[in-house]
Image (cartoon, helix red, strand yellow):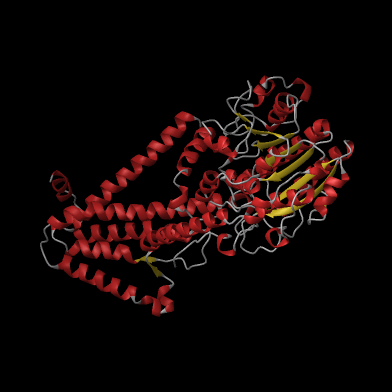
Length: 566
């Protein structure tokens, strides 16, 4: 009982201690709700759980309080952790946390911190976070113990009883609108929300498994891609390239210059372009889910669907091209660890960061600049292919933290990438950049501008008679786009053959580079568009355009995450 001996020497009067604890608990519970980005609910001032805890511990005997205090402290901190996670996920990905699918993202957070801050600083940040949690548990537990110490008068019990009466009145508050706007149960809401999301996720898993089993339209689609005439096809995902870059007034001046430069490059090479806007299943991160939606023809908006799809070994765009005589390759400079999913997808070749012979510097999180990725792809993959090539590229220069921003260097001098060394320390550090939101937004726009101009330069130099599908994986985080922004991404198809492009115009694509304001379905529809436009069995229009529940189009209940149980 040494802790109790320490507590007994504290000089605060009991009423001050009880009041401070009540205010502190209440603030911990309600404050995250004030900034929650995806709810339209009132901002509560009183958390009934804080009243319950203080009132109960004022009335509990010390022997019982000694065991219940750590449990209550953990429950409070779990609720706080869930609320802060919902808050962070809302800012970063535009949706709340779902423990059923998001636990693997913890490793991604560590990876991002290490890339942005360096390994030592990332370890320090994580250790400080763990120590803060431990200190809160210990401090809150000791504070609750003191509430239940032997009482010199009945004042403690009276105050505890009043607290419980306030709790009872608060629970009845929903019938009184004026009170309910300011009184809530945040911890209960966060816990029950997770249960609701778990149940929703399990139901969605079963629904998706059935969709895979009954995937008649896509399974029956035997692509021959005769319309491509054995041309190489390059599917290049531009990180964080969403329609906001083109249509948002904050970025329009820069994006118009970007599109004009791209148009000039394509015209100089005799290339035409058609574009569409398609909905991405994610925002702010989890790019692999967007890639998977395109490749599979299914709406894959969470890790469970992703894993189910790979386990099923279902048809994909990769296998569509393979069965028509194409060699397939993935160029993935952001993959720095073992990637079993790559083998499950069925690529003939996988070029991850370790296999790509890049001798230049890492650029914070970005392992290598896009210009080198294109250079490596052209010289070491495409030039070595002895069959028509279908290649998927991940272009990561426009990935956060968007510093440094590189110029385009002389393509003929790139060699093994050492030429990029002087730019490793150019520009602000991530920590300095991310202290100013307006500056972050400017650097984001510059990073996307670099990625798109670089892709256009490569196409002008090397695409020849190939087909380039240049598309965004997802919109950037709400920090960049603002709350409620569209989740659409531009998809540009570039080719010197007018017939290749006209076939897509017949499917709803529009000539030019500016992403249309109206949406042409989702990224899950793109595989069907390609199969139908370039040869093979047509995909039914209801799957591609109607938005009705199907294997290829997101059902209404899956287009938006469940966000709150309130």
